[in-house]
Length: 140
Image (cartoon, rainbow, N blue to C red; front, side, top):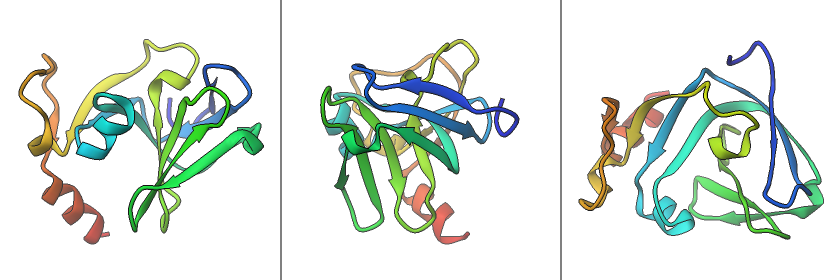
């Protein structure tokens, strides 16, 4: 998986279709308070660079959720389409959008210091605090 071929998928109602090349077959979970408020739980996403294409882009609304990032969603059905860094054009695409689904490996959890105590995952993953995530991006 990754850069070899694009994955395809869509929103719940199908008016927005996505084609994206992922960095690899890893899934990360974000436990930050914004992701949990946005989706009612952690965001499970695949990392993509700028090679993300949308059909039906006229149905996409974008919310600027911070100085550095924005979130896209379908205007018709409300499906979450992406979390995107404004400067780098880096996308985190919810893995549930992609057709298929068994090819993923749960590899990383970020903002682990904001994860509520009422849930946990059995998989052993790399765990980063919010400070570690910000330090990783400032080092680039």
